Length: 378
Image (cartoon, rainbow, N blue to C red; front, side, top):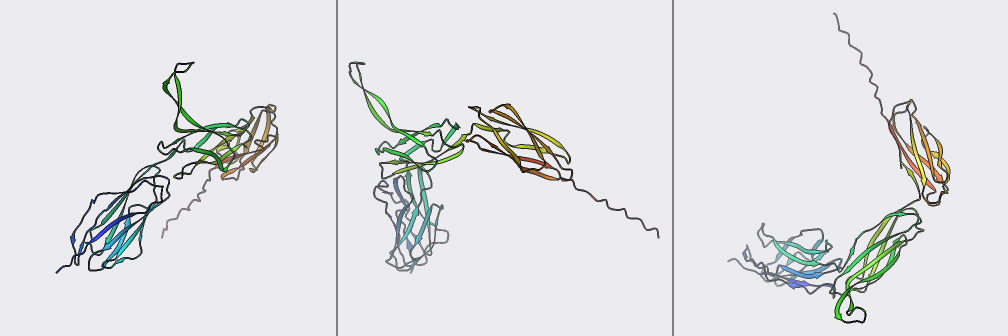
């Protein structure tokens, strides 16, 4: 006579207090009774909803499995449907009357939206093609949204500084305030943080307009970032942290980057001579210029390419210079020509300019003719 056993699943939530909304246990969506070689399996409550979640890095829960039968059941495998979910057990065997916990750790892999993850449990009590599937769901919500999420300073020239604005939107039902902004890594920035209000007409009369306006917050903040004028020329990068009054999301970090353009520039930015032939002579002009005060001086010019010579012409003293390059390809050269033209200037924002040099001389393969074979006459 075949014995019967019952295997049921209970979902237990263990959220950090205050970090997620109360979980909701779904109705039973699967109840399976199968006659096996030594028992019967019943699965209950295979779906669980955690509700709204916010800023958590991970969530942990235990699935409790109890063996109500008379024979030992073994868990042969547990699989999850993504790398963001992990599931482990303390033992693979469940003796009659014992309870075993499956520890599940979920790391939300999206910034916002619905989450649904599955855990598949295999046991030796089931037929080979049976998979007992558990499902957990949640709704990931963003308490604080930043527009844009990555800030790029555009068209910044040395000595002028720059300004970019970030709009911050907070969840209306959480009364979140942005307390301050600070740079936690990289170049210095200055901030002006102000709440955004909308004018709500409530119909009360005043002496001036006959109506009284009231200010109502709309959970929005404006952060104006100022790049100092003395920021050095070149690329810059910063990380900015916003601190809030919310324990659910106490801080938000976003990147800020850009390029401060020097008043001194070289055009073209590289000296490309193209495809060349042995012994060929080719010319190319580089213009060095400065905007603003005409105080630029060329202090020295060197090159790592021996085949290059140059002449410096003054187009506009202190402002524009022309560098006439001449490349003379050696007769025995084949392959790449590469190196740099290195220029030092009197300008503190761009004391050195390095211009890459490129060219190519095709390699000609010499084919040795094969001597003709003489026919034998004997």
